[in-house]
Length: 318
Image 1 (spheres, rainbow, N blue to C red):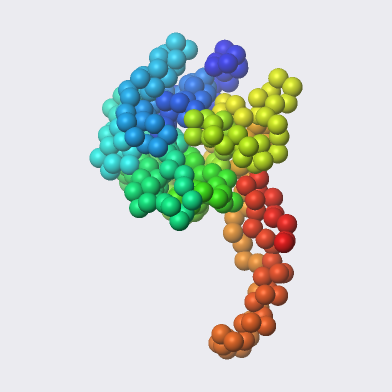
Image 2: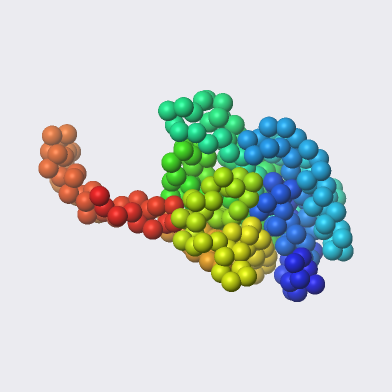
């Protein structure tokens, strides 16, 4: 039996998985779930606070101990993935320890929430450093390995799974920095899926809803987003372990035909976030004059769907 009593199916048997931010919360659940399915796991976590300050080796080491107690293999990393060389060391650790790399789960993140008019440059930059630069750096070093294999005539069956957010794909007040970074990750996912397909790499992302250190002060928002009180009988809708089955499947050989997608996931619900699409248009033969648009744009906007709320539901026109 695997973690929390689930029977192991060996879905990821022998696969080498790097998970960032895996010392606590959703990342920890990913690490345990992959190990329960037979994967060898590199547990990366700087061990800092939710705002990114400080460091602590123990969260990553504790998860490794939990995995080893399951009879599986794991190793801890405390490298800072927002640092280019730190991200390189993380990938190299997987190669040196387990002899290869099959899956990267970019999960690490921090929060520096503040209303935009009070947000500092440092609060903006620090969030982008971990979320966007960290996702880029780890993915880039992993891609270098897979590219070298492809050039040597070896085939890859590799996966990158990124972590976006409902704040990134739908928007949330007070999270201009976090939401913008998570929106960037969603688009990064789509582009990378197209670029890395020739190397045998699929790239997908999740936008999870769960109770973690980063969301514990947003209980009301979680309920509004999930449209639930948080329990369904004995089922805890906000348990972060609910997120991991999708991520494990995306990291398995079974998901080879799925790429370039962003999935919403929370509780027992999995959805596909439909991307930006071209909506209603108005056209003329020639260039518009600014004054002409007064009679055109309001009606055009009114004919389009409104933006979604945090639950992904179209907002009511006011």
